[in-house]
Length: 589
Image (cartoon, rainbow, N blue to C red):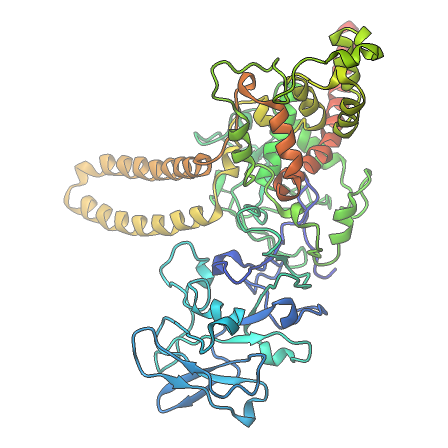
């Protein structure tokens, strides 16, 4: 069958999303998430026919074990930096701590390259002409560049350390990406994106931040319950009565041809691996995969429509609609079509498809700003400052003969642009009440749940796989220590063994609870998930969202997913009604 990627059943986007970092991003903000899982960042040599060059601001940063063009002399390692000026033989590296300076000397064997000595673990490079300092050199000096911090927990675990050669010197290499460079010349280098990078193997960090892409590679599954299933104290309320339960989380979806199932953490109800599939193959053990943020949206829609989360209806839809993701019954979004291929094409302009629809940077700021702290605030007041009642000039306006209720009803059929034109043509509509824009938000932004719900985000959307992996590693240390203590107690104080075993279970259970609480607290620290309707300046909120729409990528994705899941909700509603009618007929007979 060959390589293929699994799609989220609640948004139609794959989990194998990658990102190319920009020069000032830390290493953890770059990742390559493909089904083979062999590479954790987009390599410079795998540009897949992209035509980006140094003119686009792209270059490669050495991330391998040994540089392809290294030189060793007198016990020192020297790394090659390829600059635009191949004739610059007077470049001087100057150490920040006053150590010996190393001068670059041209070398015919290096072609376009230059040789630079990098002393120590910090790289403080000074240019002879500050105004001509190239971007790659500034990156080289920065903490985001090659001076990785091995023990910094914010760095990706696989990117924490760089290999050190026998001489003990850390090696750094910057390669300018040129069309004529062969793959072997940039082998082992990470592709750093410039502002106009054309590489489609990852989203350009200049166009979407890592914060906006939170959780885009993380998935969870609904797993069918077996007869031996039993409830757990950490279950969600709906799991007790549903036909399916929630798996743990995973941040790497393997290719469907890999022959293996993804491992999840924690192993909820003893399930360590899940058969995550967006297609029903008739195997009987397929599990429905989804982004945790996408399930958050469905939870809200289901409760809004049915008064409850209908997980049984959702899973019934999953099995009853076994469509291949490239031929759905509903019309596929044009942006999804533009990205769909054997590998996900990270096309320009589709970055919002990878943006988290729940945790949206800048939205909280907009919501806070729209909430009035004025004790005399009244939503019936005029939305436009400095404007009074219509003047006598509007007495011939036919709209003045209509009561206010009818005038406002007319506005309900217009979009903001039409309303602006109407305000110019009729003084009757010159000043409008603030609460009118609440109607527009309810009509145009039904997915803006912060204005009508006080429900916190879905619990597992606030938990990260990184935190779970760290907890699992720490738990392993605890278990080893507990095993040691247990042996001692069993041999020396057997009468205390039962008490000790109970204490072990209590401690381990509290660790899980504490982790979830910490993740929730961290996620909600800056998030505004609800605002008081009576204090909202609805006109300001509507205007700010419209004005900043291009930068609110997560909100744009929320709008798209809301429409996508509307089809599922309608399907469930139809079948709930059919079931209700069948039950009514049975009762009548």
